[in-house]
Image (cartoon, rainbow, N blue to C red; front, side, top):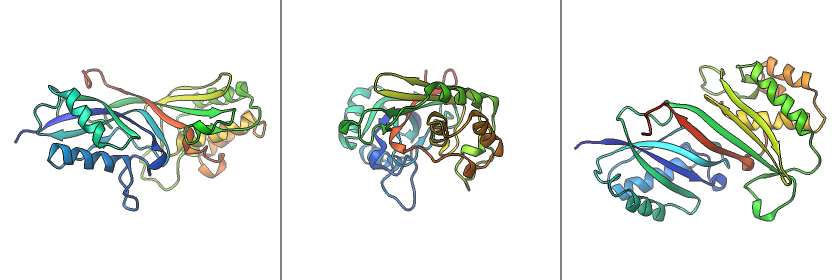
Length: 254
């Protein structure tokens, strides 16, 4: 039986899940739900590998995962299969595309950049609960952008990394880090070749201390240079964080 490799593009509201990654102490992860659905509908054991971890309560507007299957018509009858998959999935997970790829293509290791966005709402909105972080009070967004710019002076982000992980290195290459303010929202967009666990939320939480006038720019730099998570601010709530873009080496998705 010949197996072929496929990527799926999906999105999910992470509110009800213990993150993407399968965990021993929680059966309710996005990966487990997708595994079970694909295995049942394709009538063969399927294990998907995702493009990265998202923590409990974190959302994904664009997420990729790969799996191997012997089904021959997944591309030919893609629209029909996507309809079946989405009918079988819970309402907070959706699949948009199925892409046939090279047998060695890897959703995690072939990704060259990932972009996250953190959304803060300045106005309490009952319809945005669990979709954005409500923050009362004025913020100095210019000061927060100055702090964001200083991130480019560093590549070791240990100060913003969850402790006691199995990371071989805390070195990351940052491509973008920017705050933008509109009438009701303040959004932070950050892109890098890789992210450490809890890194974005820790950066947001610490930068907000600058925005509130509780931390100077010099102190912000000093925290990065300590390379110690306990020196940085609290992690921002998960509800405001979205994975919005994953980019791959040329040819992977073509």
